[in-house]
Amino acid sequence: MPLISIVIPVYNAELFLNYSLQSIINQTFTDWECLVINDGSTDDSLNIITNYANKDNRIRCITIPHGGNASIPRAKGVKEALGKWIVYFDADDALSSDYLSKMVSKSLEFDVDILLGRMVMYDSTLNNIDNNSIPNVSFDMHQIMNGIDAFLLTIGDWIIGCNGMMVKANFVMLTTTIE
Image (cartoon, rainbow, N blue to C red; front, side, top):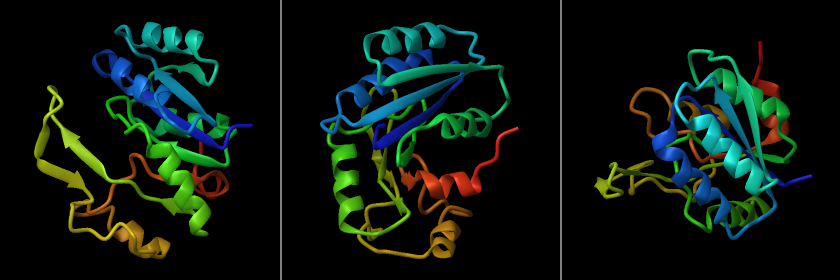
C-alpha cells in the first residue's frame, strides 16, 4: 500500500498533462500512487493518461462520464485511494522533484491532519507571474493552526489554496461524499 495517493481530476487537459505527470514521476520520494480521473475528456487526455499508466504501474487511470466540475472526479479519486495521505493536484499543476519528500518529512515532524504547500504561479511559457504565489511569500508556512482558522483563509481572498496540500486520508474520508 502506498503512503501517498495523488488525486488528479482531468477534463480536456492535453496541453498540460505530460508536464504534470512527469513532475510526479520525477519525485525523489517514490512510495506513491497517482489516481488520474478522466472526467469524460474529448481531447487527447485519455491517451496521454493511458500511456503514462502503461509505463508506470503507480499511475491508475479511471474514466467517468463528464460531471461538470472537478469535485466529482476528485471525490471518485479519494474513494479509490489506497494511501495514508491524499495530495490534491490539478491537471495543470506541477511539483518540484523534492515536494513529496519534504511533505513526508514534515508529516513525521508534526502530528497534523493537513500539510500545506506553496503554489507558485507560472504562465504558459513557465515564467513566474510577478513572483505570485498562494500563500504569498509573507505567509508563515511554519505556523500550526486549527481547522477553522485554516478554512477561513481559503475563502474570500484565497490566502491559502488546496492544490498540493497533503491531507490524512481518514480525515478526507470524513468530509468527502460521492454520488
